[in-house]
Length: 536
Image (cartoon, rainbow, N blue to C red; front, side):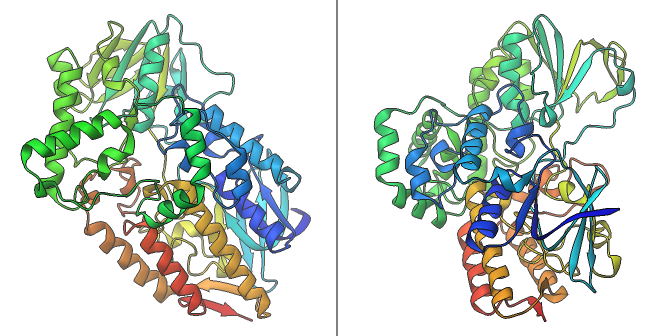
């Protein structure tokens, strides 16, 4: 194994996290820093997720970096919810504006990293057979970047084509006149169904778990609104960092039963008409009180039945077995309306599971077969831990991360793992991450990590490592924060790892809110990085 170069710091991944982390390390701390990226360009999640209908579910003017007033003033979004191509253009713009590409090695897949205690160095190995050595190692691999392809018997013998939404071909897929089967109806599947339906000869949607969804009401941004965003950029950012989810709107302090039934219906109707994630911000107790949640759930189910013409199909789509917003809450553009098309069919694979993929399509347990030319897996990701565990990361005394996390991930603040000195995990399990508007969480992590490294270096120290006690205590706080909500009631959620066979069932993100988490991280730093062992 040839060590081809030495760096002060290495960052794995060139998405939102990796780009800003590089900027903090290289331009603010003056470190010799490099990003290793397996893709051919920047973008991370938005490089790979090119599936039909791929779109952000955060308001565009909030789904961007806030560290640079000049960048905020310079860039203009075209739509309320930007599509994949526009987000990728934005990240390309950022990479060029801050001259980041010269410090990124593309087409470089990291397969392993091992800590050498004697040298206080991480040895990072790539799929190409090279090795790079560094003092500081930061993973910016994303929470939703390890595609979860179901292990279905017969898939290798399928005569048609199959694709996973998270690994979509750059050249796209031609569905014209094809018999398409989509497996999965989470937020990705809900985005892709209407677009595929418009192109395909016929679309069969295989639904195991029915889902809530709110209309996105996506539309072009008006010139007046674009100017408003620029004129009030500071106030908008201040609001975003003060809210639990990092979005540019506050959660109304009223409770569901503070108002009578007629007023409650009016508020829900107003939220439905406005669309997007603001619907769940209409009342502050929707995720902590089951009775309150039931009112919102009942409203949405009535809307589904009103939209979908066929009563049997509507009943299947509204047969939802978890609280509203306990799973990732999708927003859509004509998802339920798509089932009114003559060329779209819904199949319930909870009652009749998929048994196998045949050369000509899909066969259910009952023996029913569906002839297909293309299969689309909208089956999500091995979330949060998957992107880290697919690399062979070994810390002090050769401790493998997969062994350290055998019973589920354990971190301190989602930032470090005990036994892995100088390794930082951006938006890792135990941080708000996927429960938050991601750029807000990412900026906080990048800046905190950079400040921590600067603190260690300024004092002539060499290592920073989470203590076992701090990580265990934080794990209890993460569990308690989740238990105070309805989130764990969605027992098949990927928040719990339930979508991946054999994965430990642990609620992974911190549900106490981004604002509270930010305060806690600041207090830890102010106390000399309490809970971290700093070594000389």
